[in-house]
Length: 354
Image (tube, rainbow, N blue to C red; front, side, top):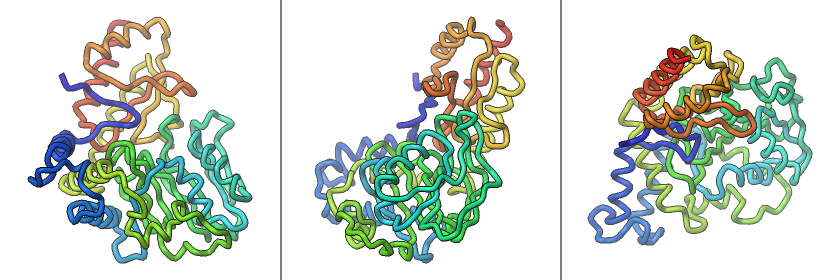
């Protein structure tokens, strides 16, 4: 039985993407060769990379606006350092909304002076700070759009005279935004885009080349752009699977289409959390994530019963992060609403047994 996969990442992918990707591993495009054994310099793979990069810009509405899309390695964690290496000259601002923001701040401090413009650490990151002042003249302002661990999501983004940098690892391609407000976006693929192993970077070229330091080649965005995202051997399979996922996204109506589905899933999930007295949401209501619903069970005595019911229903991956506890339902783009209905049904049934 195919399980209902609520994993926070690596996470669920569309079944048709898994089918096509698995076929390509055995024989890519009738070539008699596996996708993962062909040269990354071959016409076949160069075409894959070019199509993937172009489709990213098309879906984000950034075609012809001075942006480049790159598929790199090292996860979003490498981008914590790479952003600062390429953009930080004097001082950068960071909005601290959770564990990944804290990691980004820690890595950037290796490079230079960091100013924390606001933080929600005082409430274990269960809300998004608002109404804070942003100093002028920052080299950039960094934020994290969605916080997988704590289940919060930025609904709007600060206005600043500095380039806005955003870690969108867990909600990229999930909702409509004016993506041109960002100077740089980065995202690990393993939530809404593909398997772990590649990281998407979308950068406006005019913000690069302004720091005085010498940047090691492999950490230099400009060199990756000049090499068409193939400065070194790229992660062939994750890039191809990301292309398939982006093509699937386009086929279901693009970001506008998937946003409607994501809103339906989130409304259904949060309605049960709010109406069922056995459960309590973790994140502040106005900042709740459409991607990751975090909640706790009010009666500890029912924990084992709930776990047994989840297993019987084929529901996987709903345990919360250790820093929050409780439960987390990750509802990424590829998760069908039927899976959310299955989880809600179990939660409702638990109430009837209590």
